Image (cartoon, rainbow, N blue to C red; front, side):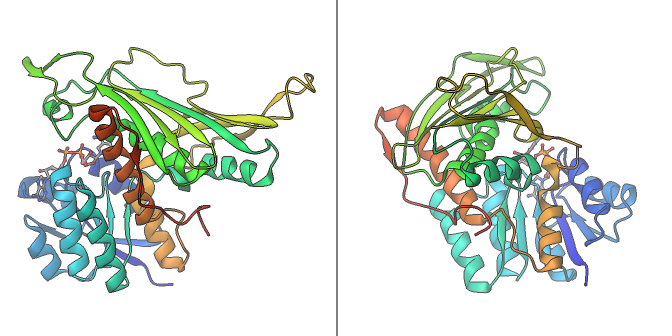
Length: 354
Ligand SMILES: NC(=O)c1ccc[n+]([C@@H]2O[C@H](COP(=O)([O-])OP(=O)(O)OC[C@H]3O[C@@H](n4cnc5c(N)ncnc54)[C@H](O)[C@@H]3O)[C@@H](O)[C@H]2O)c1
């Protein structure tokens, strides 16, 4: 089995999480890094013993033969660099979101398909053993038909230097945090048909590195997702959460049981299951079905895709799912503004892995 040749563009915070993960994979040759700050790229090449470094993605694509581009640049470069990678015949893994504009996201998927390439985006939570456990509980029917779910995930929000953009248009808690629960709950319950949402700025100003920032994007968001056949999930997220219980953050309730995810879907701890109808047979118990041994990492998405490419296996993640989640988020923000229920047009292969 030949190794998958990988190059990373964007040598900022997240790259310091991704690169050690890529380096330890037996399926990957990490050949090059690129950042418009050449000092960042050079420093990564030295620190992580990477052969090539560049200050321009076009130079990277022209000079190095590789199979998978890992795009860790700021959001505004996601779509244009994903396009450059695909046009140059590379598979692409991109940090969230895959694009900020829905029609461009669809165009990128079409481009990937036309070239026989893969395009995938974070988050990689459906590849986690916790997600797999929950999906198999649902498939087995042991909690009956799952019609109800909720997920909640927030914190007090970024405040370190350089993070003002989180509070500006195009930032917001939904795109930064809500994306995880939306990926997980559509992955478990199926594609969304429509969404209604409320989103607002509950804290009108933030202090970032001593500067006052006027908040323009959502810092408190709630959405109800209709998965069809009267199956609904409720997702809440925000930058106004001083504290949150972590013993479970996602619950899926079936007609004859329920299950919860402990920890967060990007750092899961355990899955607990209650089988049976609590009213009709009240002697049932919550039982831990999965306990993390810390072998899943949110920063492992590109390594996972490279492993699938090396083994010729179909990933549990898909570009279609990432685009569907983007459509839900954009529709939720529209719904919050108009007060209308928004229809969702896109879909993705579901159940995952089929
Ligand atoms: N920071 C986190 O905890 C986190 C977690 C998950 C996902 N993400 C996502 O990962 C992506 C990167 O986040 P980050 O925190 O690493 O950001 P960052 O700002 O620390 O890093 C981005 C890097 O890209 C480089 N860059 C900027 N423009 C470029 C260009 N035109 N060409 C090449 N390189 C360019 C910058 O110099 C910088 O080194 C973002 O989309 C973010 O939403 C971040």
